[in-house]
Image 1: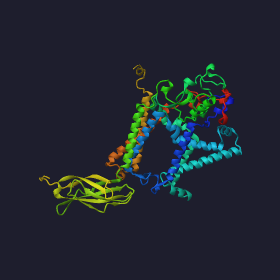
Image 2: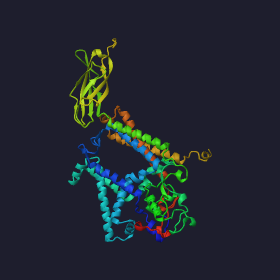
Image 3: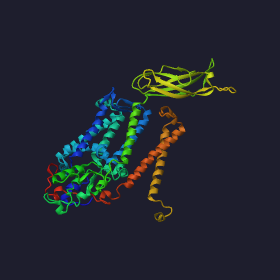
Image 4: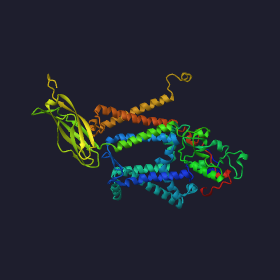
Length: 462
Length: 120
């Protein structure tokens, strides 16, 4: 770090960044985003839908419950679609308006924001915090610092607990915390996630974005000259310089930038937006908010630092709606609607017919051939169903089940199935289409393919 | 062409070295991973727990297990190399490099009339 004159040490000498508190449009937007996102995170596990936790990832049972829908391992395709949607959204929003994700939605940003609120609430504003850090360890300082640590740790522990509550029913989890009988793995993950929150949001903060996050390094690949990015209007601002309020800037040969350096001081990553787009910028828009306020005080129009595109800064026509955006947007729309359609129209029945490995077929008296299978059937619905089993393409087949096909909600069963064919039905392999259909709901229907083996009699054509 | 001729025969460019290291290290890690995973996990036993509609033989399970681990290690080592190569250079923490940290001062230093009010 370059040596700063003594009088300015208050602002830059400390390697720790003390961002100034900002108010304004984007700061308010971030507060809203923090409340919505963290509100969802902390409240969702406590909300019950249909007698079950609204969001629960039950790993041991390998079932995900999301808003009354049950997802089974077989619904793997939806996870893949979700990931594709997430990836495409990242492309779409980055091409549209830069790192919106970083500034408003990334957990790193959101939790850091809350940790800073706590810090500000206990230790005071920026000036007070810097003074407190520089001051000797008095009882007052110890009290404030330990109070902050205490609230941080409680908040982080609550975060870890909520996180585990997405994987293990949170009400039971809460009860076992109360009775101090939390299982070892629950304890481990609560502590682990709590510690990660504490470390990332309390200490690492924007260093994670600057040094550890790959997205920052990739962003340039997703930007083009029509992407809305936070930029300083060089043409309007330069030559920058301090001035008295009544000075005519045109006479003095100055631009609109008064060089107050507040945009640098509010920046959580400590960069100067006036140097142009930098990979450290997390698009939090704090510099826009603060510069707008300075412009108001100076009586200049707002927007010296603003969301704009490279093309409009160069006085060219900007095309925010451009082919790239339209293609990404359409793809996103198709995938999201396809996923929603698939999710609402999936058949909550899964069935596999597995041949008995021990025998090819069995010949029974009366010229009947029997093939034995195990039917692995899963009722993926939340209601019980009785199913009818029928062979579609061969009327001669007789179906014999070891027990009626009645399954409770989410029941998995292995049922022994015997298919009996008259010898006259054919020789060699018989391909059968077997239909399973719920008696109470004809839309729950599944056709499975099966092979039945028949003896081959040489010299006799089937 | 001119640039290529300046390269000393038998010496690799940085990009080549990077790619070679990434692939080879990922391969080694995947080998070790495959050994350990399948030492404690029987792919035959996996068949009962298998959820996708096609059946998986043990040979396919071994191959897919290895390829999966290889892909994951490749992604990890490629990203690591990328992050280190594109990150700040040596001396960054001591303020060296292309760009010095921005200079800041109290806003009222140069603008005595600026009324900072409550957010001073």
